[in-house]
Image (tube, rainbow, N blue to C red; front, side):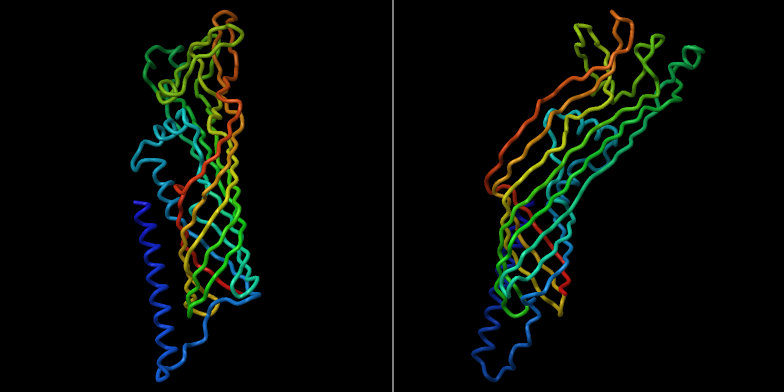
Length: 318
């Protein structure tokens, strides 16, 4: 679906170029026709502020959680995934500044951010009330809370080279990008872990999906539950960008544009990832907190022509 959309945009750009060049040639050859109106294309010394929308990033964002999915299940699925998740490095919406160095070249810079903050709450059985009154079995009066944070963004600096045909400008360019993305999960439990209640009731999502056992000074903590999960981490990436597209100056100082972007090379680093747990030690008869490391840190390099995006923009020149 994504590739078909990009191919349609490329075909539209090529068609518009052919029609514009043909129209200009016809007007130049036929002296009976009036001369072309003055072009609205931006000239040297002008600058612009543009708002960009990337439907490819939008499609990825919508695909993170299935429509109608139970929020708690969606959070657990993302947080418990063994694969390290990268948040959108190319935001769905971003702002771009452009300055025309000459009539055909320009410097451009864009910045955008994306993120999410989920606070999922679910009632669980009140263990203290149950201990005081056995008839309270099954009564859910306290809450477990999962806080799930995701943050991402990107900065792109580059140069653009263009060719004006009437009120259309066809351009290509290159640049350098920096992006970041990541997050964490924190847990707050309604039933505290105490010597009277060493195995507190916990919401099913955490009990069945995220609880894990670990070793702490050779003490078995088989019923440990997570306090903080940092298996996503904040990933930092650097890359080279290429872009080609079309801009239509439909009025003085205003234009709309469409372009295809490619990131042929990306280098990314990810910090140490870990999970903090709490568990009850049968040997020491007390609650112990410990950290279970997942990775000491990773890095990777991606290259090729697969990482393609689409940018639609609205621009104001001044």
